[in-house]
Image (cartoon, rainbow, N blue to C red):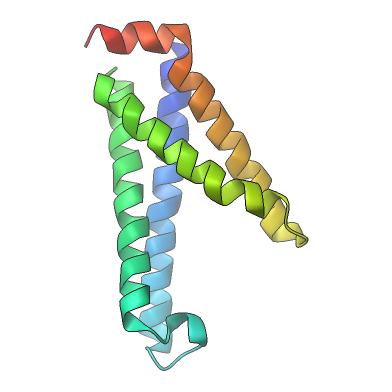
Length: 130
C-alpha cells in the first residue's frame, strides 16, 4: 500500500504545481496585459497554455485522489502525467542553466518515482480489486 501513497503524493505534488503555474501565468497576463513581453503577446497562445496546464493539473489531482482510494482508472492518469513529465523534464535536466537543470532533475525524479509506484506489485494488486 505504500506504493499507492507514493503514487498519490507524486500526482498530487505535480497537479498542485501545474495548477499553481496556470494561476501564475494568469496573474502575469492580468498584471502585464497582452501588450507585455513576447511570451504574453499572443492571447490565443496564452489562453491555450493556461488551459493545458490547468487541465493537466486537475487531471493529476484527480489521479492523486483516485490512487488514494485505489481506483484502477487513476493509475492511467498517473502514468500519462509521468510520461509527459519525462518529455519536459529530460531536456530541462540537460540544460545549461542551474535553475532549469535543477527543476528538470527534480521533475525526472518525481516522474520515475510515479512510474515505479504505478507498476509496483502492491499497486497493481490494489487497483485490480477496484
